[in-house]
Image (cartoon, rainbow, N blue to C red):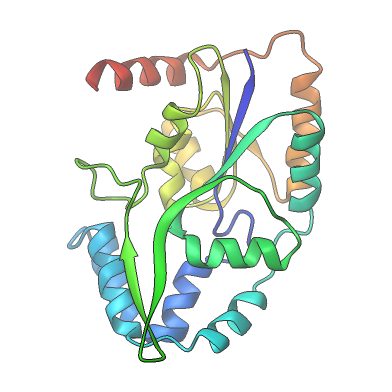
Length: 239
């Protein structure tokens, strides 16, 4: 048995939803309209991203880097990374955002070598112009609500005996939280856990997470959450 930790990026590691801010900044206000269509379930997550990418058109990469490097992260996330590495605890960042900015923001903050899964955005250069190409390597064929299926990533990278820990705050965290034994929640995810009677730990920073994790690790054998274990078994039986 081992702990496997999965961490959301936008609004969890970063202080705000960088993806939404990025598309508003470079794609304009019409991107807010696309988000409204998505929330009304008129379009899928992948269609939302495709429309937002089309709205940007040609990307000024220098300006984009300046924008991304100005995005603050939780100051205690680096300590959390060191905490996990010192104890050989496997953790992965799982995001329904874009690898394009995740890699840049982590590296800019001196955090390298972190395993992460996200939608793939590439700036393809043609005649000196950077045009964007988006793809979805971790999608779920039967689910339209997220373009990157965090649940499947969790189930793939955790064994039957492992204790799954999930840390998140938003819409795309609602599904994976249901399959986790230990949930750290705030904001929208906290409300969802309350509505669905999912036990969780409230946190405001990764210092809170580390403090609680030290308590969990001090126990002889952390317990699985029965409802989460049943949902994982159900998911595997449907594959």
